Length: 110
Image (cartoon, rainbow, N blue to C red):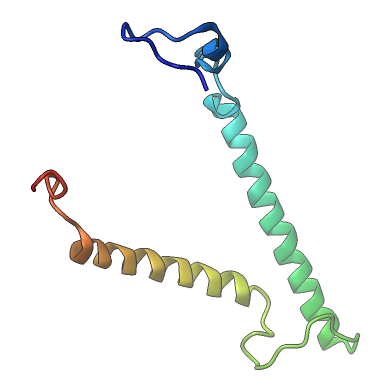
């Protein structure tokens, strides 16, 4: 590992690890929009396949999945369930922050 000199400079061995301020792939908003579009497209495809599977089950075709109750047999149930679970986790974390939060100088006091 390269050592840092008292004047703040580094030796040549660590010169390749210095950030050269080249823009990253997600610094371009167009690339971010592409990734988000890809994720939405993947979600839509999976939902459509879920609906097709549901209709096939109603038509008598053997199901690929085996729901335990009438609720988890509905199309989009697991997407809705996951969304509600994430929202509840965020709300719980906001409340936990109030309990676990420490003042800024907490570790400086001795």
